Image (tube, rainbow, N blue to C red; front, side, top):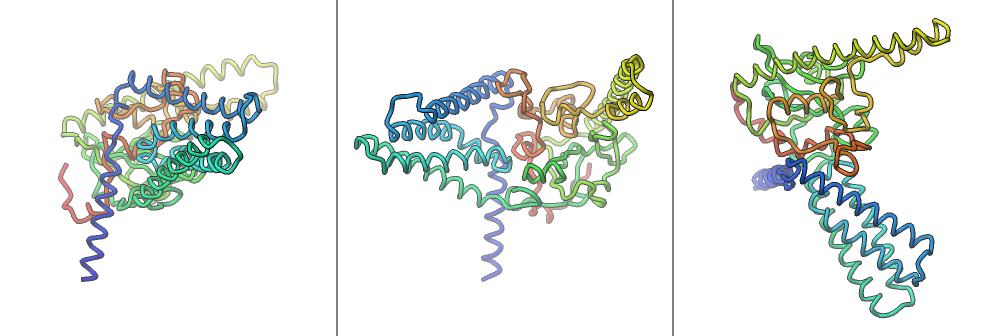
Length: 371
């Protein structure tokens, strides 16, 4: 009986994991709609922040209780609008902040308004806001139960950590932990795409800081674990043999383009440094520090698209797009119109991308498909 109960609990947790990775934001696939949505969201946050600042500076001739209840209401409405999306992307540290911080501040402001001397209407509004915030917090806690900590951050319950190479298919996306994930308190911070080359060998495609785009063996991730633990995402629409060959050729072409770009950038750098009125040792230092490897350094904090140099995840994303895989929109910038400011393409966000599904522990029992 105990074993049956334990198995029932495991099955329930795995169902929660599956349901949590099914995206509810398919509209992200439409760049124009998503741009408008993100612009509205950014403007809303800026407006709420500006209004909060104006109130804190006492620039409105209102009572303290009125200021508190109005500011709390603004953040409550904004958080309620976004809560479904934020709960779904709980594994992203920014999503957790966008929930927990407004809830904490909002309850505090509503409590001040409730206990301050004021009109009864203000007290009634404050009570309603407290219940609104508590409702959001209850949903936050219930959603948190769908995740478990893996490494430096949460992943859906039932996620298969470190599946073997035998479980991998051409087109799969591997997300690993590492320094970036540790710094951001997220579960993953590096990405690799699994490819079957035309000679039948399985390789990984990615872009590294010290060498740019390249192909290397599976055991770098699965055995050596150079980037720590990892999770695996299957394409929902697996590639056939023709697509596998096409993806391998695309990767080879991308690597060639990447090396050519790096060579041209280094040639420009050498020409620039050559005319500088400094010593040879100083010129050598500049060339060494700013040597282009093919990696997109600005892409680590700006989500700009590029056709010839990439971060690890933007390189994988470029390959998928060239293969016609429809993913969510990434790296659109603060206002959603290609500004690319402070919105890098983060690997953790692919845990909720509708083009993929996260591989769970339950798939250990399934026979591996032949590809």
